[in-house]
Length: 302
Figure 1: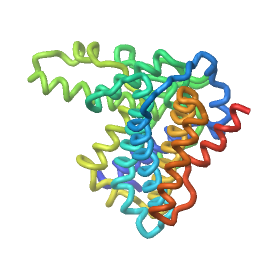
Figure 2 (figure 1 turned 135 degrees about the horizontal axis):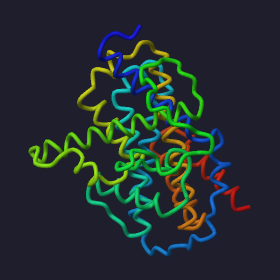
Figure 3 (figure 1 turned 180 degrees about the vertical axis):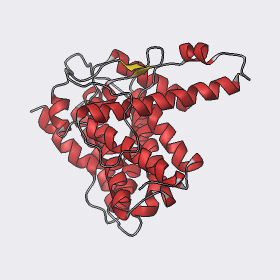
Figure 4 (figure 1 turned 180 degrees about the horizontal axis):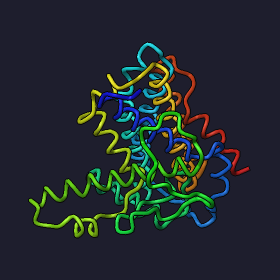
């Protein structure tokens, strides 16, 4: 039975993370190959140094995340920082993606808004990256066929049935509660000079990145205890970080594929291979997810 505040908080975040992870397709490669990239025009960049730097940061953070997942001795403690690592890993790869368009957001909010704009204008995304949550209507911009949102779904139900509708319903609940937190913050920042209704009209659409940012703040600040004392078992901790790693892997796969199409597969391959050689020189690690994903991406163009 879930009783303490910490247990309730961790169970809520566990359910949200599992739901988001399960929204990604089981075979991301299959969905990525269905994306129409024929309109993408290659971008000629004389200096790829900044993009390369951001990709290095992203891949190295993913490696740290995966190492914690593979070590049972630290997995219970690792979840305190796994959401932080997930956010900054995706933060880095998104900055690399936006740099292709000479877009350099100055802060987290600007980055989120820039990504929302790309999601709205480009049909290059899969799973939970494919949709945005619209504050004014309090609904998603799009849903997979047959999915119905249950707005009353409980975020505390353990071992809930992972149907697509349930996963999207929990994604919706997480999006809606994130919106409520944003409204509250802006309401008090305005010293209550604006109504919550007016503030809602002013808030920009929300995407998965907003949710990951909030999750990062909850584990790193407000609900830090939940990620230490709220875990019911080692198994729960392992499930949490496993799904965090899956979100990272599939998000990277999506953005790496699009980046490779803009740069050219050969130019992108050079960056990945340079990273692999640099890391092998510095450590004994031989397997890198970015290399595995690249090999799959190469097969797309054949």
